[in-house]
Length: 387
Image (cartoon, rainbow, N blue to C red; front, side, top):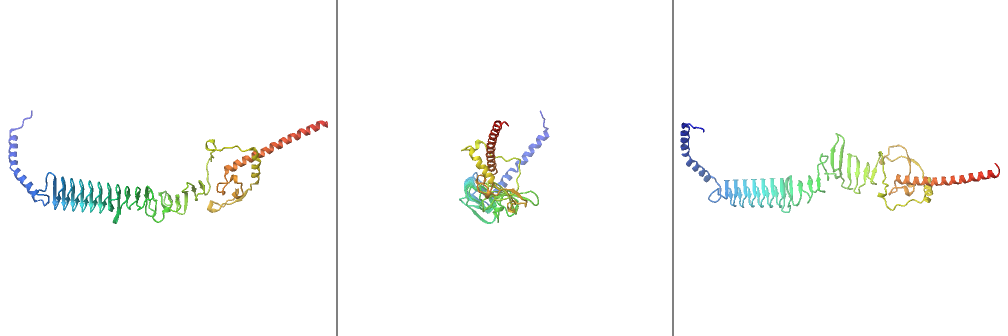
């Protein structure tokens, strides 16, 4: 048990008696402060369901609150705070200066913002969220009543009316269902645009020259790599310098390295590798028929008619000035030509060569048989002559 000295008990009783004398004065001062507040809410400024605190504030909605200067909360559970703000939608909130929240469950914050759509939010400077469940932020971003479910954020020097629904936009405005960052008209699901030569993640729709659109990565101070979509010919471009296209994938899926492709893979220059495999399994083929042996001599004749030529490739086609040995497509049989007739299919040429070898071997076998027969006849003649 802890014993409290008698002099402490007597002292505490005296303090309680002294404090009780100030209670009526404190209550009076509290009600005096409330009475002097210049709020315009019914006879009382604060009730169980309404509260107005400040200068020329009005809280007329049930469970509403108005605070600041010239604020109005006129609907159920609405709240207006700041200067000249209005919360006229049920469960709405207006804060800042000149802001209005008129949509149910809407929020307007900042300087002269307006949230008029149901469950909308407007923030920043002179923004408007007029669509259902819309969100507008920044400066002068103004969503109309048609812009349902749209998010926009950005900056402009004048009002930007946006009626796009179901969009996520970073100013300027975009197209329905697409995301535009820095572009008014996104051409794809995600479209990002920067100024000329900006280092950005993606520049589809580049200002001034859309052919320079794409992802850009710095390699060093003098060499840049790009990937993007061209505007005129719908080609995917990989670029290393401004003067050349190192890699092109066109709209049909053809791939060109150093050139605009005419084939599925088109290389302008030398190519190297450790292996090139032609798909030859029965799994990949149909209508398979074995070549008749009578065709081999014909193949041999075609091979014998092929003329070799020396030549140099033109510079625009990867020429390096060196003399080459090979074929001229126009002088070759159709069986070994590419689809456009301007190239030689080496796999087909190899197959024709093997067929020609088979034809030649057939002739060799035939000559060997004839030679053996002649030897047999000579031997028989010698035996008859006793030689």
